[in-house]
Image (cartoon, rainbow, N blue to C red):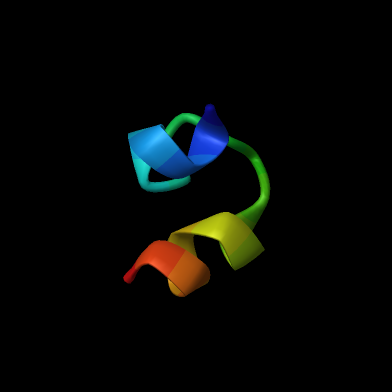
Length: 20
């Protein structure tokens, strides 16, 4: 689910980097 939010809402920056 975090991936759908582009990691913006997630506290993990790794998800944001993976998505772009």
